[in-house]
Structures are given as C-alpha cells and as structure tokens.
Length: 537
Image 1 (cartoon, rainbow, N blue to C red):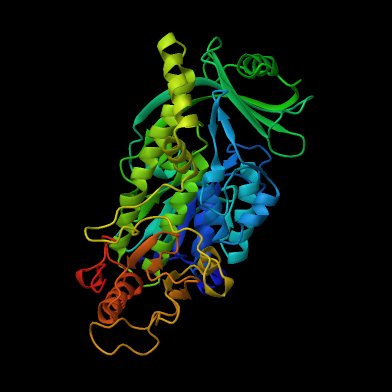
Image 2: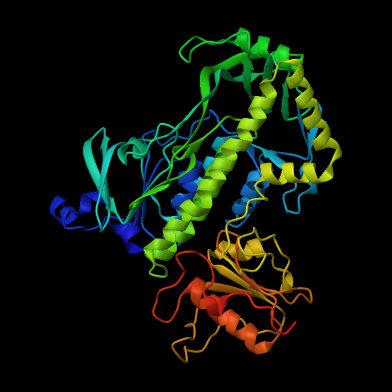
C-alpha cells in the first residue's frame, strides 16, 4: 500500500504546503454509500491514497433504500471476491412478476448469476466498507463538506467536523454524495429534470403473514406496492396510492401503508410495528457532464430516477467500476489524464438509458385509462410470449446488455461485457480480474505478454505487471484483452502469425503502456497498427 495512505493526512500538511500544491492523498471520495465505497476500495487496492469524507456517523444504518442487486453488479462483486458472501446473506430470485402477469426470467442470462438478488443496501455497504478499510482507505466520518477549489495541480475539499474546519488536497475528487450532492452544487453543475411521482411512501414493518416471495410487487393503476424481505423479520414496503397525494412533509403512517398494499396486492399481510415511515417524491434528473476539471460525479449525485427496475444502486456501482481503473491508470503514470474523459463518454449514455427505462416502467404502472390498460396488456404479452423481447428486457434490467462505444474498424467484441469464461487450468475470468489488471486470453500455446525488453520504438515494453495472461480451455482462436472492469478492450481473429503478433503488440502498447510510459489512448479505440485484422483467414 502507498505510504501516503498510511502515514500522512490533512493534519500533516501545513496551509503553506497546501497552497504550494502539496497533496495529502491521491483521491478524495465524498460520500460513503455503495458507489463511494466501491470506488474508494478499488483505488486503495491499486495502491493509491484515498480519503473518504462522509457527513454521517461511522455506524452503518439498519435502514435500507436499495433492495436489489442485479447480475452485472454481482459480476463486479465477483471480480472483487465479494459476490458469494453477499449472495449467502440474501434471497436469489429466479423470476419476477410485473403488473401481476408479466414474467421477467433471469434464468436465461448467460452469467454465473442468473437471478435477481434481494438484499438490503446496508449489507452491500457492510461488505464494501470492510474491504475499503482493509485496503487502507482513510475514513473521516461526521465531516460536512463546505466546498472545494481546484487548479491545474489538484483539488482541495473543505469540510467541517465537531472539532472545527479542515481541508484535504488530492489529485482528483469524486462526488458520490447522493441526490442532494454538495459537490455537484459546488462545481456549479445543473441537475435538470422533473418529478415523475409524488407522495411515494416507504416503511420498514413486520408482517403477521409471510408473502409467497421475498419480493412481491404489483400495480393496478390506482396504486402500486412492493414488499421485500431484508432479514431479521423486517420488510421494506414502497407504495403509492392515487387517492392519497400529499407533500413530502405530510405525515405518513401505518394505516396508509396498509391501505395502499391492500389496493395493489390484495392484502396487507398483517403489517405491524412500523419502525420507520417516510413520504418522498421521485425525480428523473441527470447532470449534463460527469466531469468538471479534476472533479467527477457518480451514482445519485450524477443521475436519479424512480425506483422502478431497481436500477439506482446498480447503476452507481457500475459508474464506480468504470472510473476506478481509469483513475488508477492515470495516477500510476500509465495513462494520460485525457483517458478520464471516457468516463463521460461511456457512462453518461448508460445513466440516460437508466432514466428512460425506469421512467417507462413507472409510467406503465401508473396508467389508469382504458387505452392505458390495453397498452399494459400488450406489453405483458410481448414480454411473456416473444423470446427476443423477453431476453432484451432481462438483459437491460440486469445490466448484462450494456456495451460501450468502440471505434471504427474495431472487432465486434470490443466494448462488450466479457462473460465469465472458463479458462485453461480451471480458472475463471472474473477470478483473474480480482488482481485489478487487464487479462489477455490467447489460444493455448500462443505467446502472451512479452517478457523480454522492448527491442525497438514500436515494441511494447514488458507489461506483465499490468496484464494477467490466460489461455482458452477450448480450441478457440480469438485473442481477447479484457479491461479491469470486465469489458473487452480489444480482440482479433487474425490467424496469420505476423498479422496476429503485430496486432497483439499494438494492443498491449495501446492499452497497457508503451515504451515511453504513456499508455491507454484517449479515445479508447485501437491505433491503426493495433486495429483488428482478419488477414490470413
């Protein structure tokens, strides 16, 4: 671990030092929710100094907001050695019923995790916080961020604690501080959008009668409700009643929760002992850019939408997985700062898609006219009876269908999620990704990463400290280079030895670092000499 993370802190650097640009740490993360914890843990495991500022006290809340972890997020957890433990404490569901009839079938997913995991957000946070602490992240709880200043050399975040005012300086800062993000306001980014639903009621309750499924949901047009088990005999209820519309500050109680679940589900399951009830509204909003100088936004600080589809926490965690390896590459001198612009290029469209998909689901649920009922019936039939529609729906919701832009001439695999390939020797791809490096997969017996010193200006320098090599278990001939976040960076089907070797050399130089120490291209597309070639077929 970088000594900076262990031995220095804001109190060790004087105001004069900070004014001269001295850094206390490498990255400041603001907000200790799932997005911030995953990002901080990734960076610390890469050997970087990380300070995480959080306004809440150190105890993890037993209240829960998100309830569902989708397959693609579980794959990211698998790449960090956390998936099995999270699953052991949750409820895997192999089917979801929407609107009482439409069935979403995740068992058709080609993933190690062909299900939806119902588990409370605080369990996700518990695992991620433990990992971050073990990796050496410096936590500063009870720290209210007041503002920040940035210049060409770094960013300084100012905060207040019970002991007084403080500041910390780093190369970069990331705001993962939620829908009311102080970081977003400080850098002056608008949060355009609108409210899509008001008087949404949430509660944690006990039930006299257990529902048939750990996740029960339905919509009738007059009301919708969701009941999810999250352990200890507690259930989260989320619901809406067209007949009861009130402002956020209007009191909400157990009787209202019972009424809306009766309307939507036909039963209140004997609800009692509500320990927490809240009324909120739900917005659809997204910032126009995820980066301003040395400051980034991720998770709810960058995008927010309705709870339909359970996309919020999952999208934020994917933001973190995309950004963390890029920050690490830049801070370790293996990529130019301009690589970080690809975070916007890749993740902003995904956030926009999440708003669109969640919005479509919530609007479909709220339809209460005859044409609306007919439209919903058509949607149900399409999902249930047309397999391509069903497959696309489940891939979209699960996150497995997300792909990133690839440049002209790139291999069709480039930018796509890499499945958890079984490789020679019995290893799985996502086990290899736990090392936080690129993974190069080649046919058995084919040379992988060059081990000898670079022989010329066009040769890649040895990259074995940046790339894990593996071979196909089968006779497959495609060579793949997989990014640390589990997306395919480059591939070739070339069979002519010279063309294949040239493509591999170019790809390694392009993605993992050339002889001059620069590495990953700004545009995340292969240079001309690294482009896929099919010569020799």
